[in-house]
Image (tube, rainbow, N blue to C red):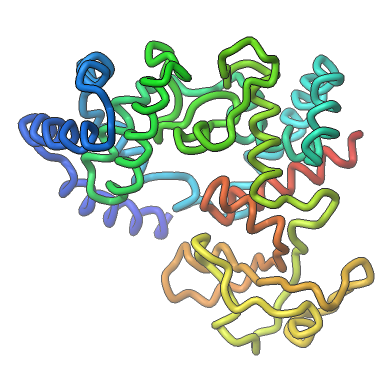
Length: 331
């Protein structure tokens, strides 16, 4: 409770500074229009698509209070890898076996990983989000925490609409602007989404296009099929702090497994090449600043780092890989 109270105090202090007046948002919209037009967006497109955009205070709340910021790893993973989720994933696979198997074969991405991603992102398509994505992205562009990132996403979305690749009338999804069964951001749609069923439109709330697009994305960023994500380990207290990663931005100070063996209790590496380059993460160490919490700890491989490209959260990537392993034991 103490941790949450501290977080809430910091949240409220920060939150009080992000609200501007409606006039401020209108001024931002005028300024953003100039940026969009310079990027090649037609004025008619901008005026049509952005006419009903509004500031959404709830989006700022969600941004500041994400589960990745305050839930410990055990809680975070257990909530997202339940037996109920396994049952639901198996049912989805059973009903779409031919499609999912063909996607796995074509893109060299395990069906278990795809099911895991879809299960964690949208509970297998049952919760894709109801937020107005245009307003969400506008709110986050207007906000200063990650303005540059969300401005770029909003520009990309306008470009997709202008090219008739997306119908702006159906753009409802997550508070962060993600869309579809696998929660693609606009730049991900632009770079990796596919019209897999060849009906001349990309439908990311369609099982065919969404699965193929997710597999294409994972394949293109370098996923290695049938390779590990992580090993849970128990660290000795003498491990230098510089090897303990608590940030998802980049896994630093990676070494060969054989190097880290001396810092790990009872490490059994019979199934792993000692020369593989790995990193170590201690995801709960960041919940309390300057804490010495070494549990849980994980050795992470290159595949794990690729999941971080999907979502920059240590706990999200752990949950995805954990659920993937559970599905592997079911098929």
